[in-house]
Length: 423
Ligand code: HAM
Image (cartoon, rainbow, N blue to C red):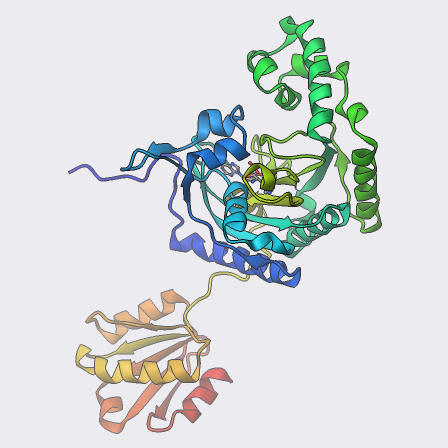
């Protein structure tokens, strides 16, 4: 019979790597908590309309990449391609925005893209959204916090920050008009994708990787010249806060981001060690989205990073910043399966006394010699053995796998044994 395979671009996270995921999540969770963020968990499936109204109908994500399907009722549902829209929907629906909120989330996102290194159809984001603050200080805080993430993961020298201001919707409207007029005079030099975007989403042309298009853009109007005084001052203040906190950045005037909801500040942490998928983390301000989705006007800012890309960078460093996979402390073996009752009982008593210990019990019938081989392979620090004489004398034998030393302890009172194991 044909084996059923995983869906293309949706790999499993197997136990040999899942410990890396847990440690990354644990490290970031601690940092989020230290910045007073709380976790929110949103559903993976939302009404398709939510994404059309937030990400934008003429973005790549909505036009080409969404997993959308009618449910049994005929309503159009989508697997979430990102977390911001669902987070805003949840905050409005659960009345969370009566006061400022600092929220973080993690989980799978889905985009129907062509899979390649660092790009999958199911991928994972760790993201954060802050609601209720309009000044640049909160943007400075999240950029300082993300810099601290990279530091905690030993990645500070692998990433750099790109920053831009895309102003208000009105500034972008005026800019777009002039940009389109300029580009329409030079359509012959525009790549195919950019020609298509001229009418649908001209700002994305700034992102084009095509050399001719980029050359053309050098002489094009610049969005910076269309920013209102308020937007310019906001950006200048953010830059000065970052400088005073020693957060290095590059002002990239071509950076516009691929989702429609942003205004003013946008940023990306990029890496030259990720190949074509260079963006590790992206975000920005989106002051209009809450109102656009039916809530009361509320300023907001956030970001999300791709965990798979984070892992690619950590891999290049040999995962040096992580603690390594947790190995068993005790490999518990019995000479005969008829001793399992005593073994289970002793293992449970030890788990209560040594809650941090990893105790691996051997259940299959096999020789002690064979079980010692398994214990050795498992990397356990100790082997515990119950054989005939131990059972007869109410004892347990412990072998220190590193020293090769073997000792026997009474099991009616376990304090000598636990002292030895924790010494
Ligand atoms: P985004 O730039 O679309 O922003 O995605 C954020 C990050 O998710 C990217 O920088 C990348 O690391 C990762 N990512 C995106 N697509 C894929 C993929 N197909 N495979 C692997 N990784 C991927 C957002 O999603 C916004 N919601 C961020 C945000 C939050 N803005 C404000 N708040």
